Image (tube, rainbow, N blue to C red):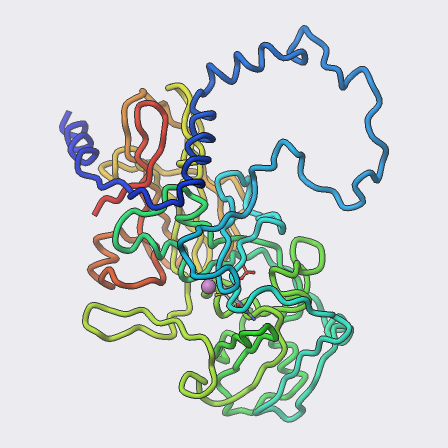
Length: 435
Ligand SMILES: Nc1nc2c(c(=O)[nH]1)N[C@H]1C(S)=C(S)[C@@H](COP(=O)(O)O)O[C@H]1N2
Ligand SMILES: [Mo]
């Protein structure tokens, strides 16, 4: 009773996200939402009328299909055409220095298909010829070297499944609930199997000076985007990546070669990588072109905040995946931590008043997306759904209040607060915030 009252109060108090999506997106989204919302009833009726439903025999079982190799490079079913990257028109001034978002609501497991991994460009997508591309390592090394792609393939190869997240992921949510779609609230996030050469292997080859402590990584796109990387990370798990999900890197992800710093800001994962300069201090005040800092209420700023701390979000239900009828259903989501493995995830259906432990439904790799799920018997009443991740260091994903107490609300980066979806009794789901 007490709990129910608390939940009712919470539901009344939450601030819903504003109507900020461009009108056409919003209209499409509502249309999709409503179509889905028709839910079990409508869908079943439509399907029941179809010729393929037993005891009927669908036409495609009575004819030959198309020949092998009709699609020499296969594509998803045309019925899945809605699963695609999307942009938010008003977010950036142009489409060159911009971002497209991963359609998280429609993905399964933990691997993001290469074709829908979010894109973040500072100067657009360059077309790099791998035969002409070189990676140079110089500075405080005994043997400066220039590697062709063929050269890189001669080194021992390593594959790892790791997430990639822009530190601005969810940045629009700092002040209030804003993006009424999972794709936009959390979609600067992906997880791939990355294959390449450990940076430490290449550095050994070049003979790094003992007092070297930083590396500047620079891209060959028009922005020459560069970031200073501490030597500890370079010697730990930083990977010079040439392949993604079993094939060579996609152009969008930095073809033919990029840096991946597992668990760290996506911004440090320099694409179309051409130069690594070894030095003994960060390049911030010299030539580093990109620097992400978190402005604090005190006026001070946090810098070198490389690690993406533990985070999680429910992917079903979510605004793009409203619920049909009440009853038993499978609630699931994704959790990840730049510090290592996810240890456990709790789910709340009453805005954080009570919690239940979810179970993992994927492999649990360090610094990778981890999928969790939990059974729930929805009684049809409005509810506030949340997930809370804990990683192997014991770090607990913070509430908005905890995060804002520590960082204020004018930041853009590293928003990892517990996210709330408000489920309405008609099954629709909206983005809200509980302070
Ligand atoms: N050379 C270069 N590297 C880059 C960028 C860029 O614009 N140019 N964008 C960075 C940012 S801000 C992010 S979040 C990630 C995004 O990687 P993705 O586009 O493969 O998702 O790449 C990083 N590496
Ligand atoms: Mo980014």
